[in-house]
Amino acid sequence: MTSNPIMIGGVAADRLRSISEREAAAYAKARPKTRTALQNGSAAFLDGVPMLWMLDWPQPFPMLVAEASGATLTDIDGHRLDDFCLGDTGSMFGHSPAPVAAAISEQASRGLTYMLPTLDALDVGSLLQEKFGPFRWQIATTATDANRFSIRVARAVTGRPKILFFAGCYHGAVDDAMGRDEGGRTVARPGLVGQVVDLNETSVVVEFNDLDALEAALAKGDVAAVLAEPVMTNSCMVLPEPGYHDALRALTRKYGTLLIIDETHTISTGLGGYTRTHGLEPDMFVLGKPVAGGLPAAVWGMADDVARRFAEFDATRPPGFSGIGTTLSANPLQFAAMKANLSEVMTEENYAHMEAGATRLASGLSAAIARHKAPWHCVRVGARVEFICHPTLLRNGTESYEAHKPELEKAIHAALVNKGCLIAPFHNMMLVSPATSFEQIDRLIAAFDEITAELMA
Image 1 (cartoon, rainbow, N blue to C red):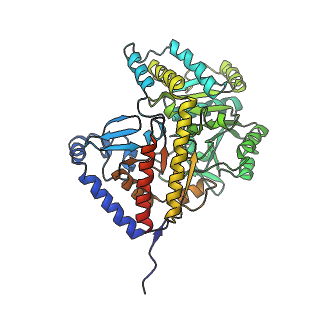
Image 2 (image 1 turned 135 degrees about the vertical axis):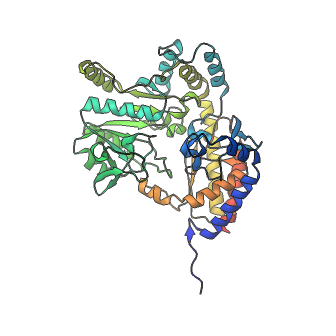
């Protein structure tokens, strides 16, 4: 009598292993120039890559990019891929949008950084208020920095030490966010490098969509702010339940806690992000990655009341470095790119195209999942689409991690790359940009259908 095979997301583990090995061999055989270049030129980098997460792609060695334009990426071996990763949101509006590229080129001839504002900076301030709301804005270089600075302000104006995060959240490399709840105590997530601060002193972690846990945490009176993604996006996408955001806003106000909304991934929702599309009312707003069309930049803003409270605090503190700001942030190159991106790329027309394309993509993926009876589902937030190798919608971060099937997902990703389609490496995220054509979307659907059919046969 034979034992039952080990199953991962509805697929036999031995089949996954066989497909993964086949796809890895095909990738390596097709990229001799890449392999040679890495062998000859990568030794200066730790583990052979400029950033360690570049090893998280499912391929046996990283792809070396020759160029990217619109929604297409070409590697040094000449393979053209339909790019649905788009820099994991950094190039959400396509690679090098023409207005942004022109603005960067023009500004580069006038200087790259001065530590002083420009006329473009004044225009960007007005555009930020027009697009996202009447916040008082500051500029950073990454969303990680913008979140850190927002946290400093929240603690300063409330006098409280802790920030509340949702289990499994994504806020860049913010130290305080790298926690999980363990029996009512906040501890560091497994795998965190070099953590020495006791996160129980700085952070509270509760599950998304759990209003009872949220209120219990806020009622203690030591939480300065809730830092929240409107939709959880770190592992497998988790949507807010009906009425959740209204209740979150009401509870934070009830207990004197600030609400910071991080739109770095959910800016895909529509013009103005999830906040404007769904009428959220945060005290502070953070956006990184695509705000300057792919050039490193981030923005963070505070409502008038928070700005007033911070001004009062700032007037009483001793002179010296505030811990807010980095020298190269708010440079003229960022402002030139942001002005072009905000005024000419982040438009209603472009978002309408992205929405239509993402609707087509989600529908096609869902049909393939149903056709092959895979125990998976598809979820979409505006131009952002994910397939999740789990049969039902997820409610919180813990369920999200449990639904994550790395071996299965990597096999699918590897097969898609060999069929000319690139999606995000860390999870199953796909973005539709203004440059993404319906033909590209249909090719991705066909490639996904083909590998799903093989996996579920």
